[in-house]
Length: 207
Image 1 (tube, rainbow, N blue to C red):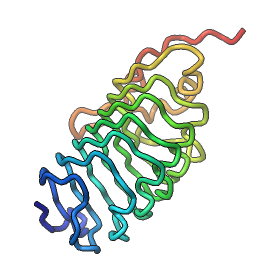
Image 2: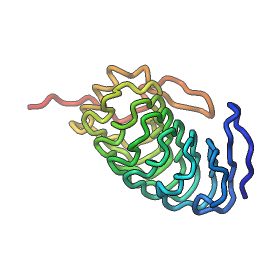
Image 3: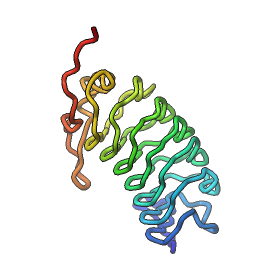
Image 4: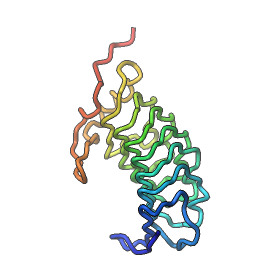
């Protein structure tokens, strides 16, 4: 169900696409840097699944059945740079789901069921430059959510049922400063569009 090759940057890769896997199989080469598991049957994740791969650069779990990501889900992957979790059933995240991922640059959580963004979810991600949250159920962003690395150069937030009112005061201020970083995508093409964050009606001043 898996075959080894190298990606475009010559990193050792295991491609396990559509192999019917519900967990990382034993026996994969521990020097693997790229793990591809799109269209499999993962329903949960444990950090121990990735522990054998000390130099793991990319994990792709697109189109599985993952519903929750607890604290430390990827703590065994400190070298992880790209993480694809789109098109799952994720409804629950924890504050420290991505703890230990100081090198992570790309995080794709699009097309899930995420409603609530934990307040310090992004704070460990000191290198994040692409965050994709399109097509979820998010209504609000906690204050100071983007944390110490405030600017995310590529931010995709479209197709969420954003609420109106004070709950979005922080996001509205963030977009006023960093609107040039807000994009939508069509296939591989990214287009700047701060208006893609819909339902941001004018906020009334506090009494």
